[in-house]
Image 1 (cartoon, rainbow, N blue to C red):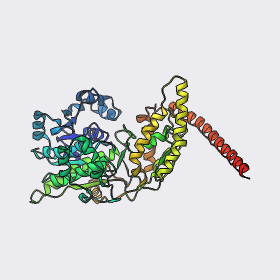
Image 2: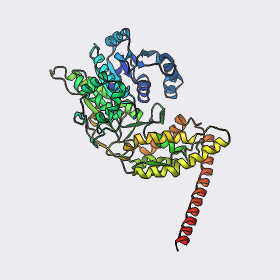
Image 3: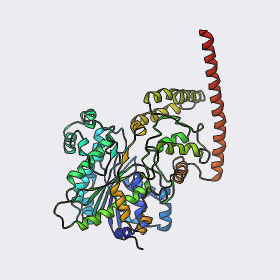
Image 4: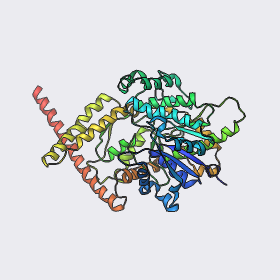
Length: 502
């Protein structure tokens, strides 16, 4: 049976923002490998002294694209760079490029965003909200547009703990158009000082501005054929193009990464909370599938006078195949002798608590005291201190993420379920995003191996793993001796106290 989705993308022209990000790169790779897309226009900005073409040329050495480039060596010829920046007026796109986009583009995937939870409000507003308004305005000028996918987040409405596939404008303290007016009228310093009042119950500028962006889609999309994709915490690939590929340490993967290196030993984490992680290749497949579905539904609705509201697709683990934080963090403890880091500084383990004050107390003994001791030894050897600066960053990030590590959310996914059921068997195989059938244990094995290889830059050979196991065994002996020594010290102090008061 022929794939309807693959047929839909044949000779299509697509405009994608956020293509240099984690999800964006996987979407582009899948489009180029699995479909006969005609052209991808990629919005990208200069960064760290590298121009847009230099940044794109680096993709040729990225392991994500190895399978693609082996089978289609010249496939990147179908990608055209559009120089721009979501922080700039009109997205920083030249008039020439804007005219090109309005004439040729048929599909838009808007995934550009700042995912920094501690981003100043004015920056998050510019990138996550105002850029969405400008994308909608640009899309309205596109003569051939058949679908617009806005990539949001499952936590855009995290002020409640059961989230349906609908809009929640009632949770915003101020309507988005008023907030963007304030952005124009006020200085950046004054606006940032107003952040606590504007955010209200939202825990950070990321979730707040993503909620504002959703309201923009709801109120300003008009008759555009638009949908919203809300993924959970996006982590490593499950199957394609290579298993376990990942290129960032945002979100929950940062916990596993820190534990694997023996750096993170205590964390504020509710092990009984639902873990809403999703593999990035499933996200890419769902983005492409919901664009197809949006275009099909728009064609069927052409006779309707009143435009239909945007369809929202929540993407989280299925309620029939649910996992908890204990499964996620437990994967490291179960596999620490299977995928050990040769660069680890101590035996991997993690103690957790749901009490923030207890976490703060525990960091003194598990992080700060060992950190200061190691850094003192480094200074005596004439080397630069390392651990305390690392712990300062870790603790700062944990402060921002703490709400999401302790609290739990549940979701309804009827639109996502209906989309999956509407797909043919060929499409379900080619664009698989089914969370019901995901084997979590097998996935964790692939993700941990990928984390070791792609984030830790460890050699994936058997010899490297053998050396890692040897190091982990040495650390285990040292860890047990330390525990025994602390136990004996505790007994000695207790006996001294008893003798002192008796």
